[in-house]
Length: 77
Image (cartoon, rainbow, N blue to C red; front, side, top):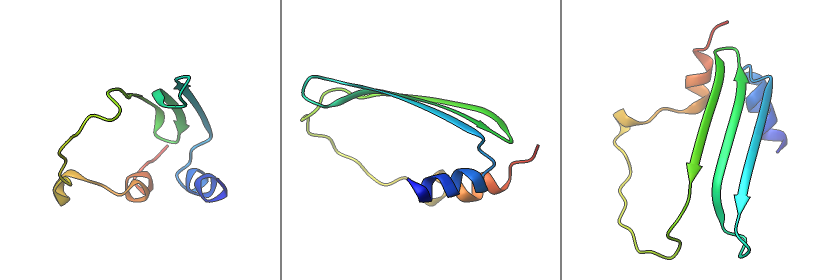
């Protein structure tokens, strides 16, 4: 948690609010994040379902990803 807070401070994040919904079996079904940063407000919502269902995945191409610290370093007031 300390490392995450250091990353937030370096990125100019002044406030964060995270809500997590879980089932009676302790499985996450929804996560909502709200973050205040130098670049403005960031909101994300993720919904999780179909636990135990087989899936096929592949890593995204290098051109489809960005390191968060690089992204945050480019923010301005």
